Each structure stands twice: as structure tokens, then as C-alpha cells.
Image (cartoon, rainbow, N blue to C red; front, side):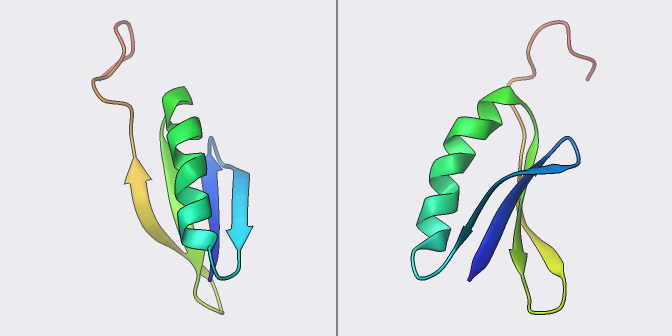
Length: 64
């Protein structure tokens, strides 16, 4: 499979191959500390959302 992480409208990490799912979720732990991220996978014709991660709780001072 093929995965990517999108943050602020840009791809910040990607993984492809037999262990791509476990690899991409290691990146999730790193990037979600910086804000909302979307994990997507390649269907063969388009990217589809696999998961959406947000910071929780919302840091003080950020609009809800």
C-alpha cells in the first residue's frame, strides 16, 4: 500500500511498501503534535482519507 500524511495542505511524510502502514503511523505520532493531520492512502486512482488526527485537548489560545 501507499500512504501519505497531509498537514496545512502539504504532504509532510509518505510511505510505500509492505510495512507502509506501521511506518506511516510512526510519523503520525511525530506530526500530530504540531497540529491537525490527515492520513491518506492511494486507491490506485485517487487519494482517500484513512484517518484524521487533531490535537486534544485544543491548546489554550486556539479558537475552538
